[in-house]
Length: 152
Image 1 (cartoon, helix red, strand yellow):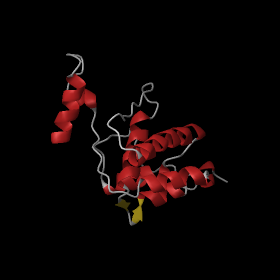
Image 2: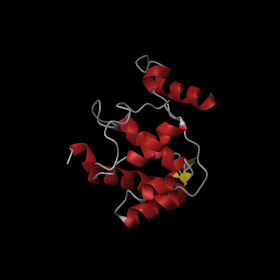
Image 3: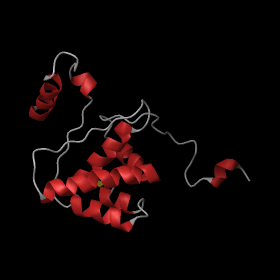
C-alpha cells in the first residue's frame, strides 16, 4: 500500500501555502472552507469571539473591537478570513458557510452560539493595514486607514 492512498484527498493537489485576503475566487473559497481544521485552541478563540459578538448584539455598544495578534505564520489572517466567512454566511459551491463549519465543531454548544450570532445580515471588509497606509505617522493613522477602507 502506498502512503498517498491513506489520505482522503489527493496529496498532489494544489494547496495555497499562504492565505491571502484578496484571494476570494469560488474554488479558493471552497478549498479554504472545506480544509480548515478547528483545533482545540481555535475552538477557544471562536468561542471568545462569538461570546463577545453575541453580547454586542444583545447589548449594543460602541466599545467593541477585536485585536488579533500572533507571530508571523501563526494563522492570524486565516482565522480572520474564516470569521469573515462565518459572519457573512454566503453560499459557496452550493453550501452555506455555516454548514461547512457545522461539521468541524465537536462542541454543539459553541456551534449553536455561532449559528445564532450569524443569523443577521453582515458585511465584512478585509484589508491588510500595512498595505493600505503607514501606521507609524501618528496616533490617528490607524483610524484614518479604517475610515478610508470603510468609505471605499
